[in-house]
Image (cartoon, rainbow, N blue to C red; front, side):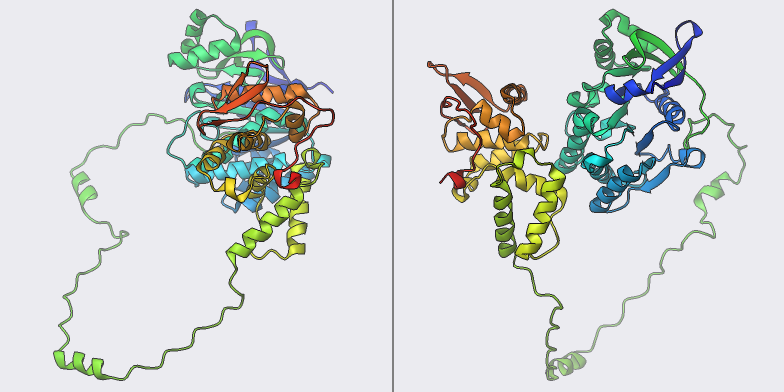
Length: 501
């Protein structure tokens, strides 16, 4: 069913219609400086599409919570644990409820982690719940920054990974990303590049105008028009809006944001009492504590008497209700369970949700002490376990550097990078294309070549060939390289090194 969303007026006063079905398949990027009307545009899009599609709004400032009264959205306060947000996201996809994730009141680190947990929960939902969802992320540069800022590396890594999954892999799971940002230069390129529809608003910085012109296929000289756009006016391009750049003026909305643009108002009349109002303490203000004189010193005789008193018998320590957890034994059991899962030959072709449930069941069978491992930690442990690294190699500095480098990669390609890195650290031949493709969960050798090209574009590896034409992968940060690869054999696959031994 084709549904047209009326966004306002286009060229020559004609209605500017957006094909909702095409939007769900091709995603949308909105860019404009503060005050250009981005939030107004998003509100118009949400109001017009609310009757037709499930919506999820990641709201860092709490501006969109007013949609709940008019359109029945459920407001989810993000001041919860990450595990609870993951469970809520799964139930949202199951019951097809439109929600607003309110991040107001959290600091930058907490906002990034909460948004990442929620988006990952929606991304990892069961296949039978992959209904279409319009996922709107306002101020996307906060959750997918192009460079590291004042936030922690862990928060940036998980948030960037969740945004990358939304824009790069979310379409097949029914997630259609709509992201808005003040500056394209602050937004990670691999997130912005996945959008096929663009609405560019008022922009003043040259670097942002140049990137906007490149995305719209316009001449650099035409980019000057972005400075002249009025509030609420945008240039649109994309299969869901127009095949050629088209001016769009956003129409009116039914609801309003809690925060509005500042308005000028006259100052109160000056009076002689202004000084007293500023410097005199009001009756409602808390009084400062009264400083009291220090107590007199204790006489020497009293001190000697206290020292001469016999000591009272010390009370026996209270026994804990639960025995103390042996961390070394817990790690040993977790490694054992991860090795059992990693040895499954069908591992690359099983979903993360199924593997995680299998992991939890095995942990209960093995009676692993302590609280269960959460989903992000499980994905990281699984990526390392699939390499089959031995304890001796795991203790080396080169392997530690390889693990640090892999943290900035998407979760699904971390095992591939680590498998190649392990071969380089141990001086073994470079895995063949067929082996890398199977480890990725594919049968296409071209997929393996594209992964190597992606790593090389990120300056993580250098691929070269020797005189016989065999491939060698060099890791500049590790100071090592793989041996020349071996000829590919039919049915070849990755086998963990322990299993091979």
